[in-house]
Structures are given as C-alpha cells and as structure tokens.
Image 1 (cartoon, rainbow, N blue to C red):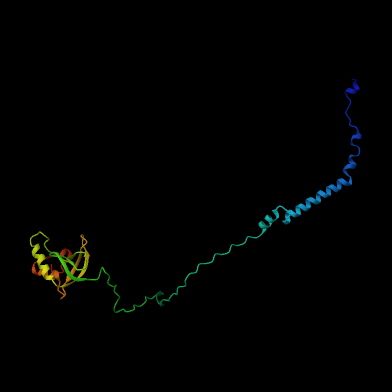
Image 2: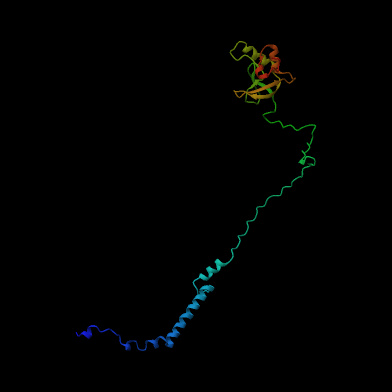
Length: 220
C-alpha cells in the first residue's frame, strides 16, 4: 500500500444520490401528504362534535359542559292544619290574659275511681277486734286510727266479739285512707246510721286510739 492510498479520504459517489431531490417533490408524495392531513381533520371533527362514528368522547364532553340540573324538591308531607284560637291580650302588661273558668263558683273535682271510691257492703268475717273482710272484696280491712288486742293476746276474744256484735246485719261504708305493710286496706268505716265504728270501739273499751296514725282524730 502506497503512501497516497494510506491517507486517502473517503468520498461517496454522487451517483448514489442522484434523483433523490426530485423524488421528495413528486406529485404523488404531495398528494399522499394532503390525504393524510384531510383524514386527520375529519377524525378530529368527528371526535369533537360527538358524531355516531366517533368513540363517544364527544358525548362525554357535552355532558361535562352542560350546566348541572337541580334535583326535584321532595314533596312536603301533608300536615293537618290546626286552628289557633287567639287569646285575649292585656294591653297594659302586653301578656295574654288567663282564660276564665267555665264555672268559677264550683271548681271541677276529679271523678271517683276504684281506688278512691268508698267500699260498701256487709262484713263477711271478723279476724280480730280491728280487722275484717267485706263481702266481694278479697283484701282485708284494717280500721284506721285504732288498735285492738291481737289474737291470743289478753282481751283479744272480747274485742273480736264486740266488733262482731256491732257489725252483724249492718252495711258498712269504708273510706280507704292508705295501705299498710301487709297490703291491708286501712279505712275509716261507718255503720249505715253514720256512726264511726272505731269511735264506738274506743268508747266501750274494746280498742284504743293510736295518735301516731290518727293524729288525735278521736281525742287521743
């Protein structure tokens, strides 16, 4: 290899590129480019306008751009109309005046119930000098405000006999005062002639008053 060949610079042949500039400017190349541009414009127009040939993105954009629609208001429930009666107004004080009573001379009282109504009837059985049963009532009655000897105590038989003779064949009216710890009805009872049974028993010596409960009603 000679010295000239060692430092020779490579130079391509011009004939390899002959006619390349003309090929880039040929009518077919320009026609193909314009067709591509037109096709892209059509696809872009279909996508933006929401055409049925598109993929549906136009519809989504139209929905997002539309103003929000207010939800229909719920129907209010039917509320019955209540008539309001105007109260008389005290112009001096500026407050409603109290409504007058229907009958101010005789205020209304609560009606009697089974608990407050008096128990009436004949004595079914005498237990001791101050305890007995009334016909039709299962609960025992205890005379209010007095104390008689208990059974098996001195004088118990005499007290029970006195109460039996006092109420035999008579109709009693017993006003319930309260209930004791034995669930007995503690009552103030009178005979059909209006006499108080407890007072009669105290007067004949068959029972004594208990001021702790009677408060001295029978004179202590």
